Image (cartoon, rainbow, N blue to C red):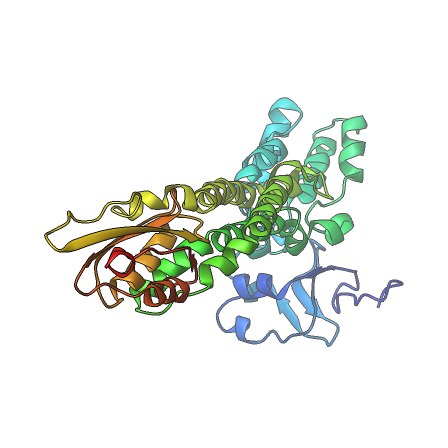
Length: 383
């Protein structure tokens, strides 16, 4: 153990850094990959040591156990330093020899904006930028260039996906810097928007299955304003997480690693915003989906028949009219019925010789979850 309590490599006696199990599972050969247990493994970054991974319990995996070459431990080309974009130490040395510097680090930082896979491709299990900078500096010194201010800054900069920034730049933390918050917020926004229009679509759904929708519309209508407010607030939170919240780590690696996930989150955010608008406005256009109920119109009278119009209270959208009309149509004596939410009225057609009773009509409307006003049946009043 070193002074920090971390185990040291059993061969070279130097301290390595932690790697995740997924790194070993991705890079060890098939037979060797069956051996790692749930214990913590470490990567030995000593170029002269044949050990690649070791554990405190003494388990060791060397270069022959890996399915890829470990660039910093190889002596023959190609010696890969960046496994995501296939940059080698030879490439860096050639650039330094020709120009005195290398563009490999800049290329990696740029291409990482579309994502990188260091934990499953790099034997070190972390971002390669610090390693690339280290070997670029060594190549400059070997080529006879003095260590300048740029090299000092490079030497002091931490490995953005491990080492000095491991706590804030681990894969789990980067995934939580905004994308998850945005997705959870918009998910809640869509759900509450759906509930805000439940006063319209649930009665329609119940009728499709032949179930009673009595009281359902009135219940959800009472809560509709609260659902709408909650939906707007959650959608606002989604936009905050996706566009305005600052990451705890501002290095290029952190920004790049989450680039594609953040783009996906923003796309989902705008799709969800459209869905929220559709559901929130559902009561406004549901009348287009239920033709024939938006105005008081029943079939023309025939000889011996009559029509009566009466008020109905409690309707909130045209979806309410379907349930009321269905109840009226099942009432004894009613030949035809029409209901208008806009006018707040219902109209029925019946045979004068066998008119429906006021009580039956009121009960039919009540069974639908609404209240009928005064009903004047001509045959009862005039005959």
